[in-house]
Length: 189
Image 1 (cartoon, rainbow, N blue to C red):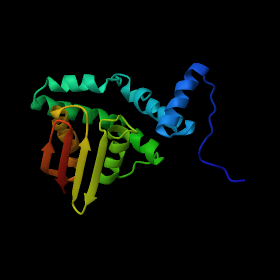
Image 2: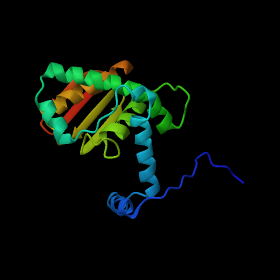
Image 3: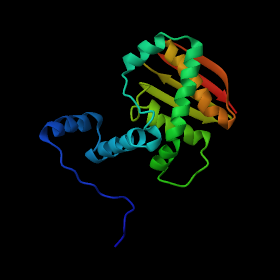
């Protein structure tokens, strides 16, 4: 008999929870298993890590975030990007462990970093910063583009956020297009 590395977990939920759960899985074309795995993943990543006890994650809506971003100057946006990067570093080792199913310290590449950020933060599967999000590596360049429903200050903040994440891989910003609901960046290594 072949032994699987995954574990099966069963749970009981109330009817009042099952109905909206069922609506979500139909609307999003998910399985209950996939939805529960994603929920457990986020719970462990953001709320149960010891390193996050003194700096717990808060849930903030897009319109609240957009309002706050709209009130700050560009220097503040850069500082916010650096602070959010520092917080991301705290959970980084768990992201690698949970996504790549490896507790070994692995040398992460720029491509792997973008895959992590895309899944956990930018895409509809993650924190949904963007309605649409794309990135493409070609030779020594990476092009990053997305459509969002925030504001131009978010585009500016995002630029600094990406620069911070990719500078350790030797990438420098060479082109930018920052708009009210769109951002496009080109970085070269």
